[in-house]
Image 1 (spheres, rainbow, N blue to C red):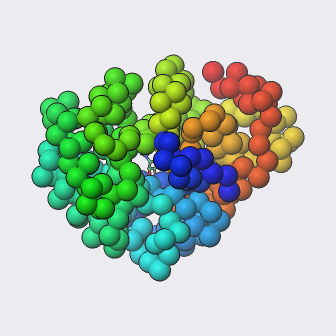
Image 2 (cartoon, rainbow, N blue to C red):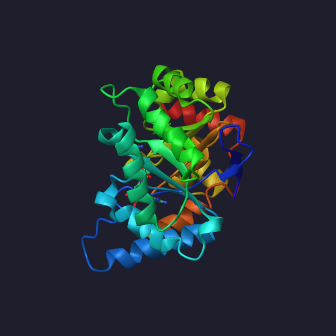
Length: 270
Ligand code: NAP
C-alpha cells in the first residue's frame, strides 16, 4: 500500500481506504457477514483508513465498523462524520459521544463535518471540534463537501488545530474539484479525500481506453482508482461490500500509471 501525509500532520494514511455508505443496510441475512468479511479483508490488505458517518444506515455502519476493528484498533485509522443538523456546540459533543460508543473506541482519528450548514456559525462548530481535540476524543478535524470559501472559513475558525482534510466527490465521471478546489487544498496542504471514486459503481464501461487496460493488465476499476489518486495530496475511499471487489481495489496501485497514460485517460474522460 502507498501512503500520503494527512494534511501537514507528519502522519501517513493509506492512499486507498474504505468507504462504508450503505454498509449496515442489510437486505438479506447474509449481508452482515459479507460486509464484515469484506472490511476485515480490506484491513488485512492495508486499506486501514475506514470512512463512516453517524448518518450511514442510522448508525449501524459505525456499529459494524466497531465490530470489524475490535482487537485491532491501533492499526486502523477511523474517520467518521457529524451530520449538518448536529453542528451547534452541544450537539457536536453529543454526536461525537454517540459515534464513539457505536465504534467501541475512545478516540476518533478524523472527525469531519459531513456537509456545511449555513444556518449554524462555523465558529461555534469548530469551537466544539477544538474541545474534542483538547479532551482527546478526536485526533484530527476535517470537513466534507466544503467549497474553497467554506474551507477557508473552517480553517480560520478552528483555532489551535489544523484543518487536515476535505472529503469531496472525485472520480472519472465527476471532476468538478479540478476547477480549483484540488489546487487550493494542495497549496494549503489539506488532504483531499475522494469519495465515490468509482462513480458509485457506475463509471461508463468505455471510460478507460482498451489499450491501457491491456498494457497494465488491470481492470477498469483498478485503473480508475489509480487515476483518481494520481495527484499529490489525494487519497480515495472506494466502498465494496463484496470481498472480491475489496481485493481488486487493494491491488489497484500495484503498478502506477505513467504521466502519459494518465493524460490519455484524462483526455478520454472529458
Ligand atoms: P464508490 O466507492 O464510487 O462505488 C461503490 C460501488 O462500486 C458499490 O456498488 C461497489 O459494489 C462497487 N465496486 C467497488 N469496488 C468495485 C470493483 N472493484 N469492481 C466493480 N465494482 C466495484 O461509491 P460510494 O460508496 O458512493 O463512495 C465511497 C465512499 O465515500 C462511501 O462509501 C462513503 O464512505 C463516502 N461518501 C461520502 C460522501 C460525503 O458526502 N462525504 C458521499 C458519498 C460517499 P459492492 O458494494 O457490491 O462491492
